[in-house]
Image 1 (cartoon, rainbow, N blue to C red):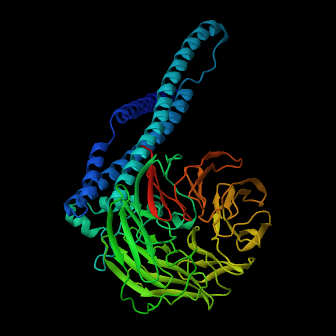
Image 2: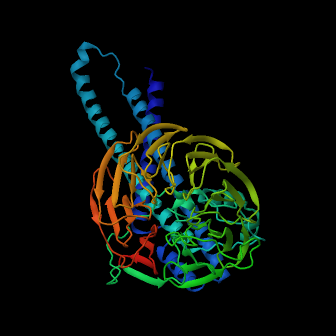
Image 3: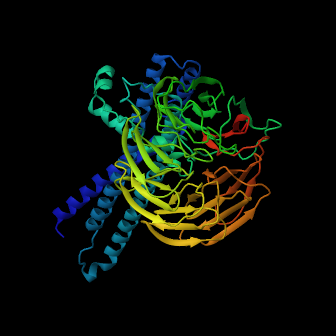
Length: 595
């Protein structure tokens, strides 16, 4: 090798080592800095949140929170970019350093007579190279390890900020400004950078979607069984011990004015629930932190609403269907066929009657939403329909008539690669429909009896079941397996990881394998279950009919974690948010949190 080539290799090695050392030093200093100070003081967030709880109508405070939220997200994504870029720079220049150093130190052919002397020279140089490589390697490795730890700090901070702001910042929407909504954090940052300038001009130029992102939905509990109706909640650090009669870990308890079997739904600091009897139908909004009643909305003067309520059974009632909320409005349906949309200030945005259900028990299918469409499963003794209404106006977007007979189950929303599907079941079908158009994608005849349980979904498979029939695993509209051992009759199954969990009205709790339907474990409890189980924080929460919550490990082996009691009966499904659990009893609404 020529001296010129060796010199070039030497300078490249020196330059690349310098880059690695400098970037590594910056990343190590970055870790030291964030381990002692967060990018934005959490006390600022906490103080703003506390102010908002007592000043819901303070518009200036809302704008201040939005600004801090925007700043925190920009900081978060900027630091994430720096960490990722720094790691790639270290890896790239580290590889250049090793390659150029190897070229520079490549031995030339040496005369035999000089062998002894040259051997000593190269041994010395080899030791120097070894320590140089070790030193740079340790520094670079330390920087890479700390970069991952730094990313965790920022990830935790990002989650903290998102939960604090998203959970506490109400979105004011009415017919005039119904197109402004919370965008997902990536969109907010991108739009702000592209439209930099004054706050006012940036606000005017940002184009926000008029529906929440999937991440926003997952941060909340917007409907029956949580996000998308799938029975899986994403909150952690949830209580497993409480006692209603003694007040242990009961944060607050509120008497419910009207009966109902719908479960609480949550968005931010708002909790919504409904109640009804033959004469009155109401929706209630509570502050989920304090339990204070914010507003009550009674349904009145709805065109098409029957003057006399239809007959229903006591175990269904007039308000069994779950509500849903998209963060701008809350939507409720009752046994009369009345549907109402209410904004977060308690104002009626629209209301309509979709027809009085001819249902011998009473209508109980819960609402779902997809983007700007409210999804209504309307099955009665006359016909079966799947309806999409505009969340802004209540106008019909599409309506699909379905074959089969009446059901009491609820739809689920399943996201695919470039689309979303609505999965529903009735007698005797389970079917999938395109969420945008309502067109049927597939249908399978496999059920019998009176269909109450809703579908479950996981790992590309749909799971449906009903008492006196069977449980079926379905993939792409084709039956994969069936199981007859234990079957739910009221509560719905839930899919999690590689398993399907469900309960029965006889007190059975069951876990089966998603792949082949094989029984993994079964445990029999003293009391039956009507409320559907929900997965949260890696645990299965299921409330029996006496109000006792059975908590088990959501795993292939049975492990009982707790059996806390409510102190009154309950046939509902729990809701989860920020270390808190919300349960509707027969008489009261409970907030459970560690004290």
